Picture 1 (cartoon, one colour):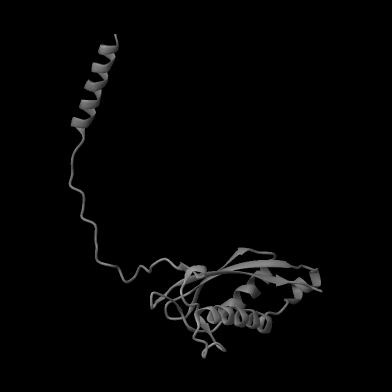
Picture 2 (cartoon, one colour; picture 1 turned 180 degrees about the vertical axis):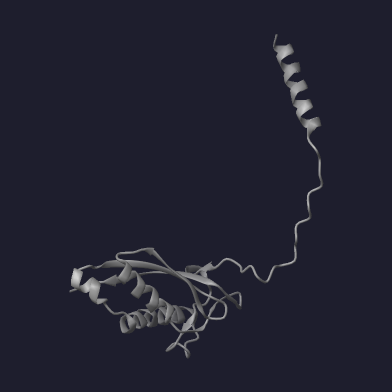
Length: 157
């Protein structure tokens, strides 16, 4: 009985395999496409952080990271405002924003990961979009795209 089931199974399997058409697989294009950008590197693992205004003279990678964080916080404090609609409604909280610093030091793909209110989310995005990066992050001596997440707090205190 087991032999008959096994032979029946082999017959069915061979008929399925014989019935398949073997077409050649198209070769994979190995030429890099300039229109497809490489994925961004997490900012936590780059060798040298991006350079913001006020950090031009800093050369040490660790000091560059600290200066980047100080200047980013300073930029947010100077450019963030509380929308009247949110203030009047007593809305407050943290807006989590993700953005990419491109190889040419521009800011792209600014998105709200977790928002509080549309008016607060919009102000957080505009504040990050207005950030001026002088030099991109580097990895192995080459400019790289980097992704960065930051919480922006809105408090009425």
